[in-house]
Image (cartoon, rainbow, N blue to C red; front, top):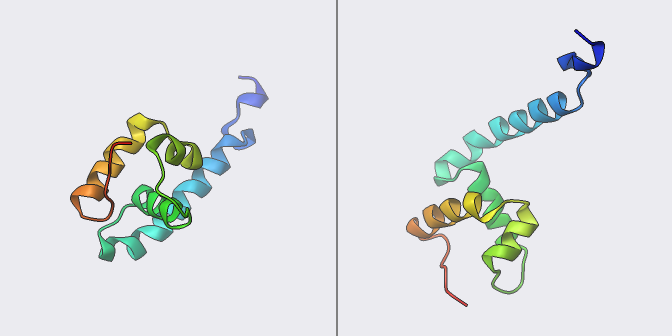
Length: 87
């Protein structure tokens, strides 16, 4: 096996592990509020934007495609945390 395929030599692995660690750290803080980490990120993006955001602009800001973002927005809307309107 080539050495460059060693998992410990891949930059992507520690980044993935760090991302998972951050999400694990936020989970107990968000659970009492009924939020997941992706929902929290959506709310942060909306709170820091002065005008209503389109789904496309929100997706760009969060680097998420609409297939990932739409279910998160639907859950937030069902919980009464956001209101979606057609342009």
